[in-house]
Amino acid sequence: MKFEVTRLKRNNFILKQEGLAKLYLYKDDSVIIPSKSMKVFYNEKMEINRDISLLAIKAYNNIINQESLEIVDSMAASGVTSLRLLKNSINIEKIYINDINPVAVKLIDKNLRLNGIASNRIALSNKDANLLFAEISQKNRLPDVISIDPFGTPNVYVDTAFKAIKKHDGLLCITATDTAVLFGVRPKACVRKYMSKPIHSEYCKEVGARILLYFISRIANINNNGITPLLTFYSNHFIRVFALTYSGKTRIQKNSLNSYGYLIHCNKCGYRTTVSEYRLGNPHVCPLCLNNDHLYYSGPLWIKEIHQKPFLDEIIQLNEQNAIGNKKRIEKLINYALQEIGMPISYYNLHKLCQKLKLSSIPKLDNLINLIKENGYTASRTHFDFLSLKTNMRIEDLKSLLLKIEK
Ligand SMILES: C[S@@+](CC[C@H](N)C(=O)[O-])C[C@H]1O[C@@H](n2cnc3c(N)ncnc32)[C@H](O)[C@@H]1O
Image (cartoon, rainbow, N blue to C red; front, top):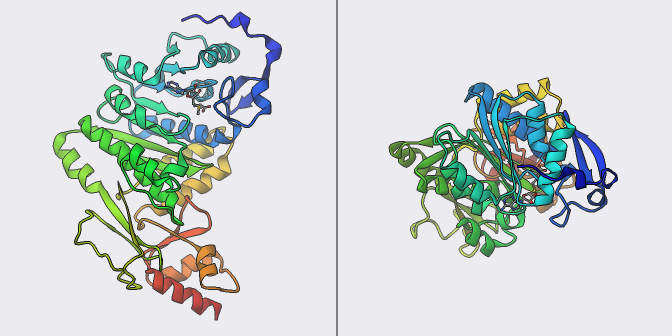
């Protein structure tokens, strides 16, 4: 496909560097807040999303699938992610770079030239992502990696993406930016879009991420697939999931189906627990504060691990070795994500807890975590909220410990 690049006037653009890629962006776009109304979308603050995507695809290629990859960047905007993948010598056999916006596709073409990338490995297109996935699903070789990075919810693209991606060990990278929906500010919209009831609590970010995983996994199931989440992270008002596909009915029935469950939360005292089924037999009275009109449930949601340790270890190594803009932040984020593995669902925001207890000072989070561990419990940081901790200590014991520290 040839685009009339000559019509794009040079002085309409600004030049930018992100990682190893150079980029032309529309000058008009550079003076407005990133939004759908830009000629071609680019958000500097989402660089961390692209940094992690680059690292995740490299990690996948190093430790899961060493083949030369077929990648689909289905919503490429300026093409920045694809350009960074191409400039970072990732083992790429073919890359589909697509956007529904024709102006974006012209800009991608211009940016490929700017970076000296002219290759028959690139398939540039201007299609609806669902149409692109449907076409790809008819090919002999199915892509190893599909990235979905829409405005808002990715929900309408997940089914066709599962039809297009490799059935086993394919890597799906999916972003959701409709966090008000997933975090329970708009609960009815969440049920409509994700078939799950959210909760607007202090740990709603984790619940939102688990609802997104549940949804992706259920759509995988109806396509005779299952998913293994490799990394699920929240940053700057978006959630990005990296999940591996697998097939086999027995494995799907054994692994996927018991990954779904419900969360029960008491709005009065903060008690929380998870159950694999939500039945009439579940408690309607909080076992802690004994109130019967404050118990709330959320779900269904993903109740198993949301990251895999070897994958995160590889990302940490690659982060050290590569030109990554948000190196320090990613190191912190992935290290906290590592600590979440094996920990219970939900977390406690220390500031909110201390405020509730009317404490005069807030202990240092790391000191409190060490103290909880000394008392024989597990405790960790969480990447979802840098002011929160995860622990298997029950909330009433945690409150008592904080009161004891205050004395
Ligand atoms: C959030 S931006 C993508 C940002 C880009 N991945 C980056 O890192 O800069 C969403 C892009 O999806 C495109 N888009 C929206 N709906 C689409 C669809 N149905 N099919 C393909 N592209 C679509 C928009 O034109 C926009 O460029």
